[in-house]
Amino acid sequence: MTLFTVHIRRDHGKPIRPEAEQLDGNSYTFEKGWTMDANDPYPGEVAWIPRDPVYPLDAPTWIASGDLEPCLSEGDYDHD
Image (cartoon, rainbow, N blue to C red):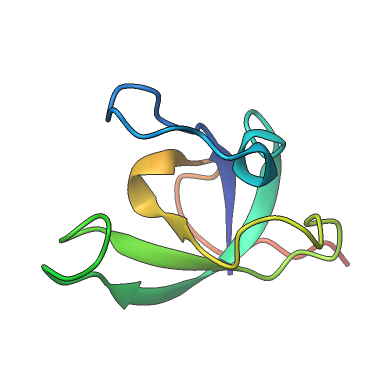
């Protein structure tokens, strides 16, 4: 798993949902999901799945790679 800081992009013309807004500026561990295709909201980006014990229960079930900034240069992060 990888530690990322969430930075919700504000320049794509889509409204930011409150459940996503609460994540902005906070760091969580994520697991790589899938690469989105032309039918997905952000084609070519990776969907990352939250795997963090403090990730809000009402937050999105995945975050696009364009909204994430790595906290560590390489490697895994573990809360324990």
